[in-house]
Image (tube, rainbow, N blue to C red):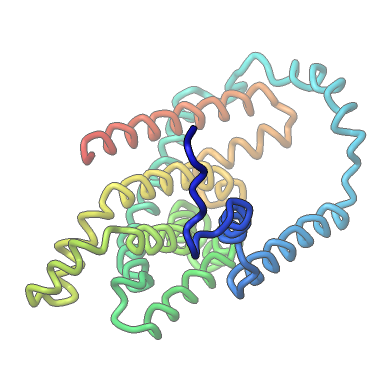
Amino acid sequence: MSKIRPRASGTPAPETAAATVATMLRRPWDRARVRTTTWAAVAAAVVVASIVVCDIAWSELVTVWSGVPAVAVQFWPPSFGSYEMSTMVDAMGETVAIALAATLLTLVASIVIGSLAARNVAPSRGMRGGMRLLLVGIRGVPEVILAIVLIVVTGLGTQAGTLALALGGVGLLGKLLADSFEEVSSGPERALAATGATRLQVYAGATLPQGTRALIGHTFYMLDTNIRAATLLGIVGAGGVGYYLLNASQGSNYGTVTAIVLMILVTVLAVEGLAMWMRRVFR
């Protein structure tokens, strides 16, 4: 018969050890946890308050579907109506041209502003804070308002739409690029800095190459957004297919509305396919 060995001195009992492990696994209510919990509660309260203020009729979410078939029939089949197909294709091409030009202008400005807004690129905290504040300020002005102001300055046409999308896009694309540059691996940056490379050389040799894939993805997302936004800006006189979309909707030509929406959908799908191919190339 084996003898029961006495527990060594200083060894905690199993119950005590289990209690110690449970205590260690329990997250303490430190300052970081209190701050996170407080902000989560504030966010939840804001969402609830927004729902209450909107006074949503939840019952209509069930009853609204009964009227959808009668309305959907009016949108089919798609047709250009009194417009010629060549006219609509030219208008869609004008919308794509506005989106492409605006995306190019946005990209050039966003690379500069977004880089200076990144923590690992900006030469000082003041510069980073100033660029971040600039991006927030730009995002606070809707593109439609910019288009209306620019139409007053430059007149009706594609120029106003292009400038409005270019200015408005800097706020979004600049923020996306700044966040992407901050998330790159710091190892290559530190290695170049250790060899005596300047800040610009570190940026060009480590930060920018690592953020290239994100830059391409964000740029094509911006192009996708600009194609749809250019359609809306055309409604206020900034050129493109939006003018015809407005006329069709006001004249109850819902088949024309469907045809225009399908044209936009095909264009967006083509841009998405090009973006996927570009990401594979730069993998």
